[in-house]
Image (cartoon, rainbow, N blue to C red):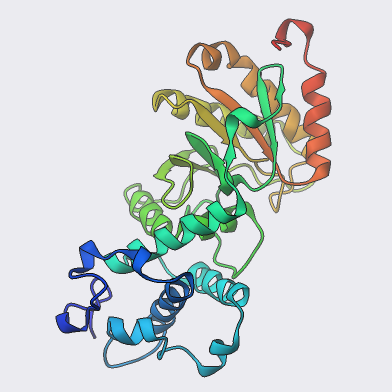
Amino acid sequence: MQTLLDPYAQNADARPSLGTKTRRFNPQKLSDEEQLDFLLAYLYAENKTAPRFPDIKTLLAGNSLPSEWAKLTADQKKHKLRALMNLRPPRQVSRIFSSIEQYFLKNCLKQKGLVEAETLPCYHGFYLYQGDITLIKAGAIVNAANATMLGCFIPGHNCIDNCIHSAAGVELRAYCDREIKKLHRTAKTAEVLVSPAFALPARYILHVTGPITTGRPTEQDCLQLAACYKNCLQQALELKLKSIVFCCLSTGVFAFPKRQAACIAINTCLKAQKQTLKAGLKVIFNVFDPENTSIYQQELERLPKEHQLD
């Protein structure tokens, strides 16, 4: 079977006139629709049992896709693409796929509207952002990962792990797989894995696994959640970053109570505030729904007067 690392190696003439070499291929020469169809065709072809991988002309023509997919809208095709990305095991892709995917995903994020950290409301030295964490320009965003560090494999799942991997591209999973294999084990709770952000406007992604709670959180659960924030802050300081965006760790499927988790997050970052301010590191709390927004606003406004820096 032909390797997927460079599916065009056996047919150099199949490379289109849009670029003379795979490594110099310019995604801008394709329309948005052509980019999307190419990405779909590539990932769909990976899942098929075929004597050889389709050449690039076939992929660009969309001839390797099911006929009914031609009737789908652009949004429906994007849902199909995300599903294929979510299901895909960690492995390399061709250079041309990488260049088209990164260009396409970055444009998708730009169309949604990127967010500047400087525009966010400040509460006593901390910033609050309600919205999509994949849109914010920052030194690092924090991903609520699972112990495998490979992202969510459920197609279209709305967890933050899935959203981040889907927006960053398939190379993120491959990168995390290589890094976690170096440990010869899964990640421990509060252990941080640093990765590039790939298509995201952030510079890095800090992947960390929070505690999983069943019922009322134990003292150990609280200490482990605090360690997640502490370890991510330390990593951001070591990388000399100017901003870090925290999601609401462990409050989703890991079931940590939202208000208690918010208090732990704020208090942990508060203890490190002198150090983060000295380093010029902005600490941003990212919330996705009105409930968490209200909780963080209330808890930030309750800070003691000596910490009200605005």
